[in-house]
Image (cartoon, rainbow, N blue to C red; front, side):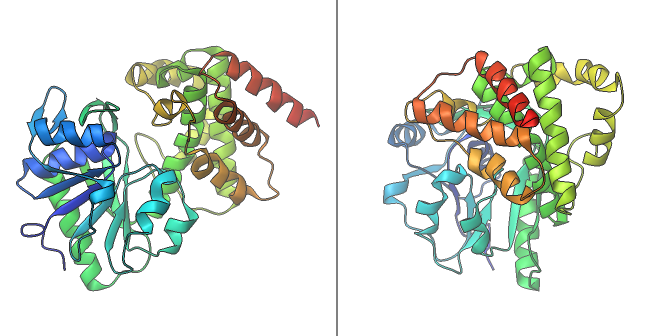
Length: 340
């Protein structure tokens, strides 16, 4: 089994999550190799290390993805965006101990049948060209099996969870089955990311602006309904179980009250899709979020998700910039779909 003391831990993708995990492990003395396709970020890391704002810098090894050689033993933490998965999977042997810590659902990755995954509920924003990140919202890291595992695989999962928990940057929760947690995170991400990214606003605006709040709450309800209809188990991430969230959203006056309470904790935090929307020839994880939900829904009605998919694809294909007007356009498309 991988021995974390003697064997390096490879982290693919130096974004908000990858940078924090690399920092946490390096701080505990583990040998960490951070891998990314951005050579500028690799060069900066080689000179200055990986940094969490207000917490300091840790030394680690940095390797360009083009030069990276997958290890024969040890952990590989996959922290890339889902649209970068194909080029990673093409490099890996079938027996590589891969641990995705991603938000979306990738059919090709699922077919690989890896033993476990992680789901991060903390928010971390990494600079685009430097391995410098800041944690903007505290949270947890759930780690668990995604299929029946052998005793050896179980020990490996536990050892990874213990290693990540030592830094105390976030709480690490070892769970028997990661899938309900991943589904719950999808329920939230597929509501937050497309709206905030399209409008070019922080996540807090989804709980303060009236139109954004209406769309956000409606997407949450629709996402929950899709998952319930598909009989997908859900788990609690954050203060409430999704069942409770659904009840709150269906109760008069209560959603508005809860929005006032939670809005300050989201102010100044940005979704992971936001940086993708801002670049030319944008690629987003919309298919791994909204696309997955639509496929899961089948014939079950999901008009707002379908309108969201059309909107984000239009923004990326036409090179449009984030704009609040996109939310009004989305509301119009949604209304048309409901009426047709």
